[in-house]
Image (tube, rainbow, N blue to C red; front, top):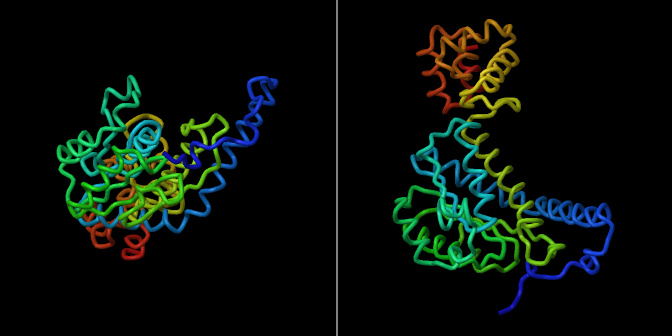
Length: 297
């Protein structure tokens, strides 16, 4: 079996265990920086993937994250943040991590080789033609990810493939392929390091652009956040105040009136008659706060 770049040997790895701790960390840190730098070459593909995902969500479909091992954890971390950050309903985000909850206790390697498990997971989740499925694998040859992508295509779903090896089998048949061509790992094959770092950055960019497409970002503010703790309630007040120019006390009052909706509170501050009128303006604008503000300004 031919080894890809993710299984290659790093040119600074020899003698790593004999270096002074800070020197060893410098090599490891440089490896992380080199991995992060490769994301720039994938920006166009990340943008295309975000458009597919946003369109699926806007059309009533779901965004499905699927992966195994460290790559699956990167996918899961991104997916779990979306409801709180951008107010996307939990039932519109699906996480398929090989091994499920058991992998959160013991990230055993056997799950990633199980093609039947992938198909069963996809069937149980009801993956269909309305969905966008993003499959991730550092090598691009993980059986779980390959089977998941194949099943999703058979159901008519849009498939985004993310991998770190050029020519990865996972890219075959994908609607969008995101190649993160990271250098060999300093610890050979430890793709939680460089490959995982590049994946995490790519997922951050992908999901943030999805949020922008959905109208949930305004001038760098997360205007559709779910304010369910003290910190986020304070943030929501500051967002309303910053966008509308009202004081924090007034922002808090408007948020209470809007049922916690930052967008509606901003529209109330801008002159919307009541929360119902604010929500109607958002509906007409496709949930874009900027367009809604223009419509009542």
